[in-house]
Image (tube, rainbow, N blue to C red):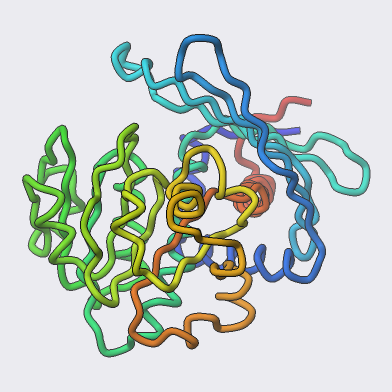
Length: 320
């Protein structure tokens, strides 16, 4: 059994196209019935917003691993100079149950989130081959920054403009140097929202704030899941989810659309519809609202990739 941390992951390298392909493969494997992903379990603490989420999963196909992600979210940590989230993944051999690896990696959680967004972004960009992408990111924390890295690697010169907004401000020096000439920092989310055709919300907000209709034909990567007032999305016809059971709960925007605007599971499309059945082709030119709660199979796929790469390159710390 080996142990990997963020430093090991950085040494092993981030290949965004590979990570997006892994999420694609995971969805195809799931669609073929060779996976298992029970609903996440939430451990909450009395009288605080703190929580720890358990996400077990098995992924067959080319991965053939099981495991669990155990991620703690403690908002008060920020005031103590600590990370808001702490992420750990345990991998098991799917044929024997033997523990194979422990990955204590906050970075993996961000890589998974951005790779899943990349799967949707790749399909969206392919469906609009003549359009340049104007990417707006609301929330310039670790997840927002990884989304910019992913989009730059995926889109290349098609990424014509980057707009960034964060309540705490954004320093241009935190933007990768090759992208600074294309980057604008906005003082108001509305300015960013109106000028972008791909919008990634990567915040930790407790209060919904987006109260206007999105730009026509845009892609909304709703990574933080709780940014949009239901009325702002009432006319959006194309809603994608990774899993309806997962995302239509916990006060997500999808749950609010369900409760207040009548959205139902049959009114949504899934990532399997996107990847396996070219669902975007049904909706040319429409605004697309993507809500990824995060499936455990993605965590297992990406953690498994790094585990196997670490073994091949003899990296990490051997525990036994």
